[in-house]
Length: 163
Image 1 (cartoon, rainbow, N blue to C red):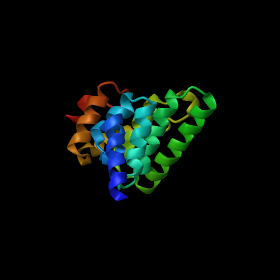
Image 2 (image 1 turned 90 degrees about the horizontal axis):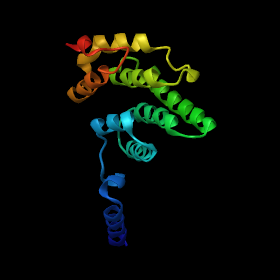
Image 3 (image 1 turned 45 degrees about the horizontal axis):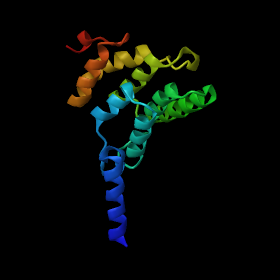
Image 4 (image 1 turned 180 degrees about the vertical axis):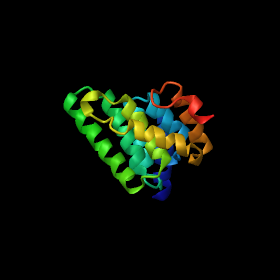
């Protein structure tokens, strides 16, 4: 019976492509930020599934950011708002429990800078930007590179803030 299940999983993964089979994937921040930047609904949903099945601490921060990005891609206004609010609640809940986490502040900054004005999700841009500038060195090297890339198009932070 176990062999049949494993064989079935391998066949499904082979047919659909290993990328679609999140069972074998691990959370990768570079991939996460690429999806947050330009992923479609399917990629976002796959990444959310991957994060949900991971042992990642405070995973709701990452899931919340992805949900808010996904909201921008949805067609029905009611669903857009509902999905955005669910994501914001997740991210804000994690931020309240860990206010000194630089990466979570970076996630919020990214979302705030791109959120539609109607969401009124822009109250912490200056605060988050200042916090990120001060605590940038606490981020992993990979996330530092991602942040510097992001700062090239950001209005709140600039590459010169980190040199």
